[in-house]
Image 1 (tube, one colour):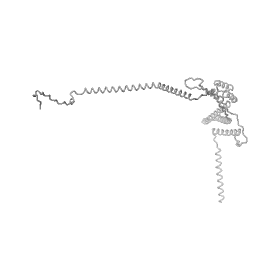
Image 2 (tube, helix red, strand yellow):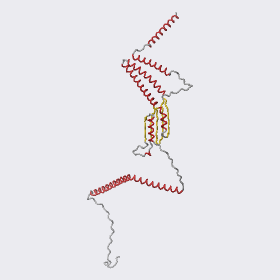
Image 3 (tube, one colour):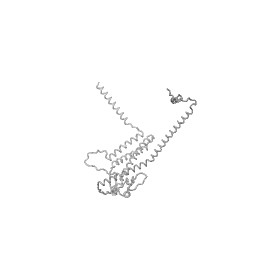
Length: 360
């Protein structure tokens, strides 16, 4: 009985689990039947199919063996050539004319140009002997004529510097082309979806996605056009510098004697003294206006101080006179001690009056 009960319970559990699994499967199999979801599902299916087709065509799914025994050839379909050159010339104007003639001969054009006559930026006109002309020009030449143009340009003057380089854009161009085909397929599908959508909200959402796709397509096409132009026309960055022929000065042998050294020393000393006096004279001339101005200021200050002192003295004397006038008339005069008088001596008596006898 117990075994029968256990078997019945196990059978019931199996039935319950199987029913739950069927319900989950049935729930997973239910899809949203709205137009937007249907369009998205269709887009996902089409995109996956196109990716598989593109991968099969390009062979990108195949595994790459990095341990190659044989070197593969590099694809050189999209190469951009560029060259930097610096040339020195004696006849600058003639060299510039030759460069323009070469550009016309090889069907090129000037992309940018910078010219300088070597003079200062002041308001003065300088002689041609003190100027050093220069020209920097970026030239675009058809790639088929690139080597011949560079060779002809080198013969214009003295080649001082040259730097050539080649940039291979084949891989980038191929990637851009593949990406463009994907975005164009997306654009076509979104246009088809937009034509079938009747709901305004869904149409706006699809239009936003379509706008982003079209912007990316425009960017890719712009980059591809730039690559095609760079491949078709190579770059030559040319610096043209005016130079003059160097002439070495002859060396004159001079004797070195005591008299000659003494003469040169005296001459240099006298010349230096004259230059010093000349310097002092020029300094005095330059400082004379300032010295006169300072002397005038000092003179005015001294005269002003003297005037103030005179006015102060007059004012003090005037105040003293007013004080004396305002003093009282009956004021006691100060006692002045008179000098002591000497005692008077009695007059001498005549001896005749006294009987001619001297007094005892």
